[in-house]
Structure formats: structure tokens, C-alpha cells
Length: 170
Image 1 (tube, rainbow, N blue to C red):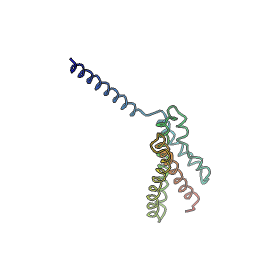
Image 2: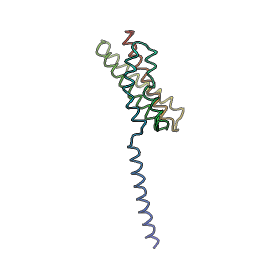
Image 3: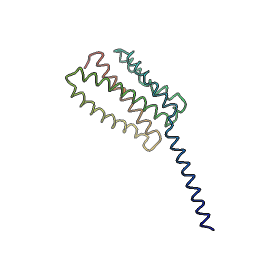
Image 4: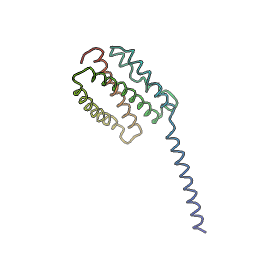
């Protein structure tokens, strides 16, 4: 009788684990409102950068154009929400940066040097953000701080290239 009860309990526990796994999987695959809000805000960043013209101050004012409103949305203030918001900010600035690099390559005989500089900068950015995030090593904010750093440094690099392009300082 004991083995029959044990087998029944194991089957019941297996069903419960399957339900829990399915629920967790569904939750992970469902985008948070913050994530959708952040992706929708990417065009606002493009508009901000375009409107900034050759003003470095105005370009700097575009930082946070995606992440800040995203964090204010439902779910944006959670650790996972903030990570997604900063990830969307980083992706939006990466798009702006990639376009600036492409324009610089098309018009500059120094294109190979720019590509080398970009590779070196990317390695430095990764190392710097790992270092900054290590303040919270093992904590829930480690990933958030790393992504925030990536977004911030990507914005800084894009702004530097755009400013140089618009003022012809490089």
C-alpha cells in the first residue's frame, strides 16, 4: 500500500512541476508593458537626435528618451522591467550609433581606422560595464546596472560621432 501511495504522490508532484514549468514559461514569453512601451519610444529618440542639430547639450538631452518613460510604466519599476527598459534604450542608441558609423565610413578615407576604433571601444565598453556592475555582484541589480551602463556608454559614443559629423570636428 505504501508504494502505491508513493507512486501516486510522485505522479501528482510531476503534474504540479509541469504546471509550474508551463506557467513560468508562459510568464517569461509574455512581454511586459514596459518592454512594449520602450520599443515604441525608439522613434522618439530618432526624432530627438534629429531635432538636436549640432548642439551637444541637446544631443545629451536625448539620453534616457527610451528608458525613462518606460520605467514609469506598469512593470517598469521592477528589476526585470528596468532591465528591459535599459535594454531597449541600448538597442535604440545602437541603431543611432550604427547609422552614424555607416555615414562616417561612406564619407571618410579613415574608415578602417574607425572600424578598429569601434572594435576597441566595444571591448572597453563591455569591460567598463562589467566593472561598474560588479558593485552589485550576485545581486538583482547587477544586470540592471550593467545594462544601464551599456545604454549610457552607447549613447555617449553615438553622441560623440554625431556631434563630430555635424560640426565637422573629426
